[in-house]
Length: 208
Length: 169
Image 1 (cartoon, rainbow over the protein chains, first blue to last red):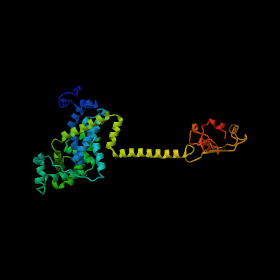
Image 2: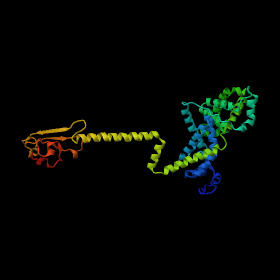
Image 3: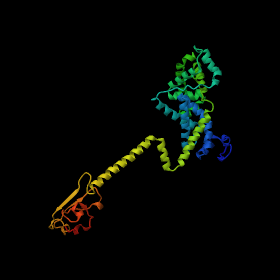
Image 4: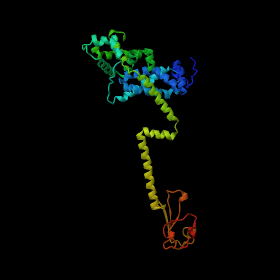
């Protein structure tokens, strides 16, 4: 779609911006139109948030880091030349910011977020398999499983954790992950393999 | 490195459950609003004149406020201290080193400078120059004991080229 930028005074501007592609929204945002950037936020915030959350295991930190990442992206938007997609670019910003944050957090006490899982998960067949059939403690509560998984994830290195979060949790392809992490697909596959191996050892209780 | 191996499939399924760890409903709408609000505030702030932005930065940064206050206090104290010394000791006093003092006691002959000798038979005066001052402020000072002119009895400054050489003690 060719960018014919709608005026900010449009009554239902959110709907209008929703029809535009990322490239046009980026151009409009570069011209200072916050409504266009708002649409970009709406499109990617959930995925960015989820990635940051799986890296930090804390909803509070994920909230702050997602906000900071989008604000930084808006400020740096003038320098965005469109060599990669906006999606890859914002992911890189969020990932780098999160890695820096985690380096600083190493020195501070780590606290686990214990927010409840989405209640839909209770009906999920895979979950029932893990907590009802294959675990010795049938009364295992949902948040205990969440805690165990988060603990296991935090024991992985940052690159391994990120690879698992992007591939196994968010379902991204190896190519996409390679672009975000600035490495080739072979490296992504290898990181996935080692990360899963470590997770298997850490979560053996549920996998036997 | 067969990533499709059975044990890895189980791990993969288990980890995939993490996608259900989501924030409460409505959280993402709120998050987007927060980001846009912060950007709007920053845009408004950028339009303010520099002095208002500076004052606002003081509100948000107590350390900066403390630093500015300390700097202003230091300047004030230095100015006050310097001012007191300057007033108490007069312009003759130089701080620290090497006043160039040239005493010409009872010059009556033409030994040094004929110009100085003119009309100063019994004059007892001292020329002082402070090297810390600029050339334009180097001034001769005259002290004539017993003079009827009060400012000549005490150490006083006379502008160079002024009536120094016409003084009659």
